[in-house]
Image (cartoon, rainbow, N blue to C red; front, side, top):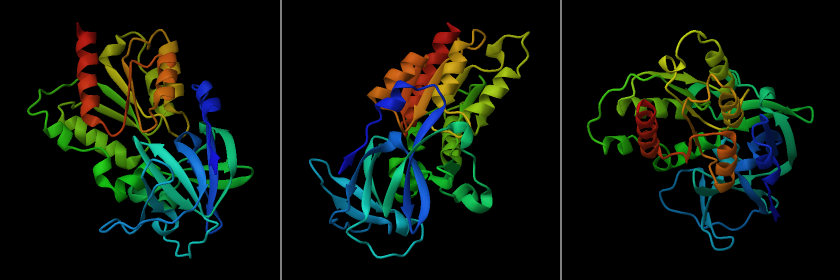
Length: 306
């Protein structure tokens, strides 16, 4: 059993670096952000659950927590016998613990987000793909999987829900410009649809922090920045530039620092909240709390207007 400690990368947030844990399935290299990983343990007997997604093996209870186990090889279309040498990567994101079966764990590499590139659609499967990025670690190409996308497909009830917006009832239309950095195609569309439903009609979507930052810097310098950007929402995990680096750049720049900025990420934990506050984020919240996001947007924009 091996516990993963994330203190190193947390202490250095804002550097635009990521630690990738590399693992194999059928001799192919895949990766996951170390910040999502809680521990690695030997595979264990699993109790099957009726009516579960085909890739869900069932549940097990390593200590005091019941954890769902996902057969990642099966999810990826690899039909191979399970063996006692298989490993469980126990993750924690979106306020959930989930274990993913893999064949081996290779190691951890620290790289810059600028070295992670969006895969070609022929590789990623387009909007339906689960490859969120391609990185080179130790001279080998590693496919970084979109674990949020995987969980959203396996358990749709655990991801962003439009009914949270429906419960708010009729809302006034807002044309205030909202800029959003989110690399997941699936989650980007969900967020956009929900915010439109909530009355926010003027949204600009960016696939990573770098493109949003470049667009900010391209704005005319002789006009009020609030006319172009009323509020920024950013994910943390994104190729090219992560949300912590984007937050640091925005809040360290006098021209932009008064723009309210919300970090909306599956990685929000107490440690991450500390780093977000240190970097200047106005608010931070965990996916999939879209209703809470709208409430916070309403509050920040109302405070800014007054």
